[in-house]
Length: 190
Image 1 (cartoon, rainbow, N blue to C red):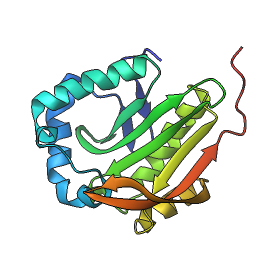
Image 2 (cartoon, rainbow, N blue to C red):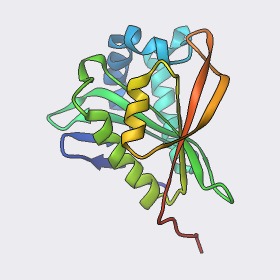
Image 3 (cartoon, rainbow, N blue to C red):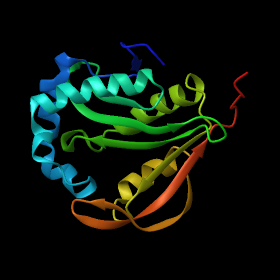
Image 4 (tube, helix red, strand yellow):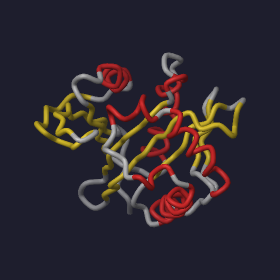
């Protein structure tokens, strides 16, 4: 997992690892969508919205990717390649007997309702299953976020249960519906 210029193309989108030059676009995405995203994300520290934090985060994202620990992609419209409209993150990658990861994603308020996240996730999931050769992707969502639940269901994720007080989101412990998708053609690594 050492391609520092990893870029995945979809018909209308490009998903790629961020570079230091992307920091202003990343900050703009999070600033412009602060109110939209805050009900679904952990409380953010004051430095979350600073260039220094994101320069460091972009570096850490690259290091984690190279170490096989995560894949954190930003989503760009193909016709506006310098504007971040979302993120797709595969974290806590585990090998050995697990061969799995966790999925998280976010989409700009203005980009909602156009099928962008479904398009982005289809491409990213294919990469995680085919190229990274993981067997299982876990994705969890709050029951009140039915839009996310519907998206995961359309993508083939199966509900496995409910975790009570699973994560602290925006300062409150929130229940989450647990879902997963498994790779039917997973192959053992020799």
